[in-house]
Amino acid sequence: MKLVIFGLGYSAGFFARAALAKGWEVTGTVRSAEKAGELSRQGLHTLVFGGFAVSTPLAKILAEADAVLISAQPDENGDPVLGALAEKLAAAEKLRWIGYLSTIGVYGDHGGAWIDETAECRPTSRRSRQRLEIEQDWLAFGERSGKPVQIFRLSGIYGPGRSPITKLRAGTATRLVKPDQVFNRIHVDDIAGVLMASIERPRAGAIYNVTDDEPAPPQDVVSFAAEVSGLTPPPETPFDPARLSPMAASFYGENKRVSNALVKRELGYAFHYPDYRQALRDLAAAGE
Image (tube, rainbow, N blue to C red):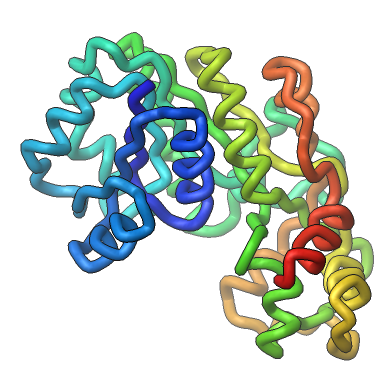
């Protein structure tokens, strides 16, 4: 199996290592030669792709790919991979799976209600509106080219080096309290697991929510992280949007409980971390 990952960042890096452990050939792209060198020293084969000219090595690897994951950040023109490589992707004869990492932010606010992939998308921020447009562009490409495109809407990502425990140790954790507010979250190991399950069962045009079982108040998650790590939690602070950055305030302006039932039912996937508690226990035990 030959896998190409565009945008070898935090989540995609965990997926790349999981694929390597299965014996797959993995190539990832980054935006700079410095980053490529750093990841190569960690055992990850990387090439530079800035969204414009496509190098000969990248074109050759793409032509031989069985699966392609797009984790690259959009730019002002939309998705850089689709913009630069649509023709090469369409011509890749062995390609049988394309995955695009999106966000549950495309749903917007649903007043705390439970929703699934059939829910209306009503994004409120510019970045979420752009993500929804890019999703539609990728799905349209799949229909035109006959390539099976899958969309993965990720909730709040956490894992080693990027968790509430990490923030507690850095002194950056907060416990903002907004009544009835909940957020969805997903451990990086389960992102990798869902992607693996989808590659084994590709379905053209599929959209999946990638989130755990338990949307929870953010202050409760920080309190539990402090408990299992033996750290002191920060004091609770009443929610005040005027004291937040515009991006943080926009997160708190959306409230929903996102279901992962389709991933379980269609892909047969069993989550390693169906809630944040066991994940934080494991991270604390590992010295996070």
